[in-house]
Length: 525
Image (tube, rainbow, N blue to C red; front, side, top):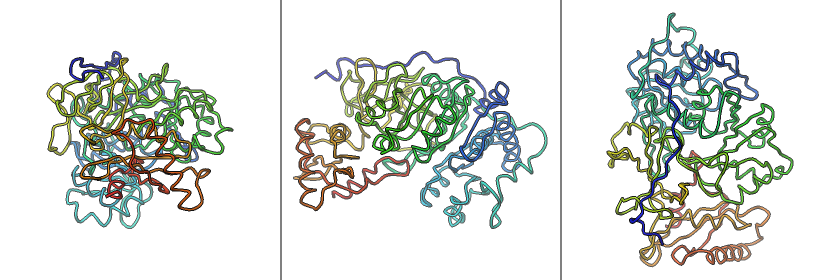
């Protein structure tokens, strides 16, 4: 094994192209000047809006919000689904001189209260569905002065459209820029409650340039986006280059149809939707006529999924790695040379390294440790102080994720630091076990976790059996699971071998679609 200390290794991204100055909403201003009549956002079945129209709407929202809140950086929570109004409100809030706080529209009442309390939001722009969860909380949120609905006013709650009607005449406010905070994103909460991440104008502008460069987007691109808009990195990248953005986040087969209908060049969706697509009964009749790349992030896709989609569509299947703290992606596969199993190389202008979990020293290729990211896309910091600093004096962000780099600088993501454990003094990364488990033909989905046994911790797994392989009766199921366990263990190192495999109808998931390993640990305990 390579000595993890003797040969520290850095993976460098390519050179970063020039990043525009000013404020984030300037992306929209420049796009409207260059591509005014071109569709900026299309929502199938709900219409479209041009860059010029979007810019005018953002301007009116900015004037209305400045009249309501002033222009001194007031936090404004924005919670909505894939709808055309989102970009105008996102850029309008920033243009008003205030700070946009995009939030998951699927948040429970508890999570909404957590986000609003931490950010001390003075206003919230939400759908009627989100307001039903928010209304009972208002008396516990003293900072929340205004709630505005997406759509018509209801029960005395004004509509955000009133901002357009009541916007004062004259130019929009001049927002802050540079290192000032433009946006606060909330982390996924996969290990604890979401943390509020401060991103500056420079962070977001850098992320837009990095992503559009890495994925070779330009003014002729049509980007189909099936990802949640509460992390709007793809919207910023498309606006930067003047690409058309098609929002299609429902059934993945419908999204394939929308990609063909609008001649999409880039197709972004969630990993679990690609898993669904790879096993869909209609897969054999589908095509992506104009798409040049399909990409996902959040968790790595197993090789069988990638091979099935590659055989059917014949386009690169890219995986990426990023987090709120990196503004956009931190790494992405190359369009020209995707690496199966890898989540790619650092984005332009950024660097990656792996550090030992105990010594915190950089390690050599193939040595497992914590992933660190350095670059102009790394956040300003958390809005609320955390027990440990995430960014050190040299600008290295400790991600809380475990992985390794190969000799070429490609990153392989394995797990969260909180999910790895030791057995007999040897590190076990459940993600490595899942790579083998997911290759079993009976297994549709899987997750491995640690379970207490004999005074220590051992690996156990939960699987969802494909419908075609589900046996009749508990004895047949037990035999199937034991067969899976034996075949997988034959490929694993002794410390990785599964002590048992259990079947579930479905894996528990968080609001961001990641597997809820905390719930699985509770189950085995």
